Length: 228
Image (cartoon, rainbow, N blue to C red; front, top):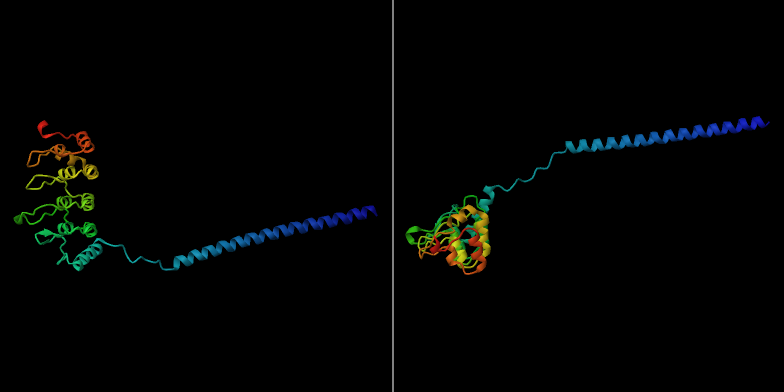
């Protein structure tokens, strides 16, 4: 009797153990199936994406498009008649006219034109052959001066009358930030004119009125006219 009970308990335990194993394997199988289905769904979604036509942008803004926008705006504002951004109007190129009229925002836009001549002078026969950079300094339009230097305006060009360069004007006006900007833009060019004399025989160091500017110029190799 006792043996029969033991046998019966053993059979129940075996059935329970086998049932548990079956449930475990079944659940694992379902998990794998779910993973496979998920992978299949992912694959199908990728395939669907590949089949969809790619969205192409409307296109980058080219130089031609940007140039046209600038020209059209200047025409609308009445500063330009043709598509030539370097044309002479009223004895000056358009860039110089904008500087004289202190149209700083338009100066900045025009300097982004791919064909702008940042050093174009006014009509030589009229005695107004100044560079835009010289005019900007003379007109105290220092924001335009910054824009011009950033666009590689030549600060070594001298005024034909007084022989002052843009460096001289920056020194005379005490614009230490612009002096440093010119130096940082092109140290070699800066050093080539650092001891040039104007029509009165003054070098930039002679014209300096602050210790800050004098010390900076001396550090870069500047001398007074009597030292040359």
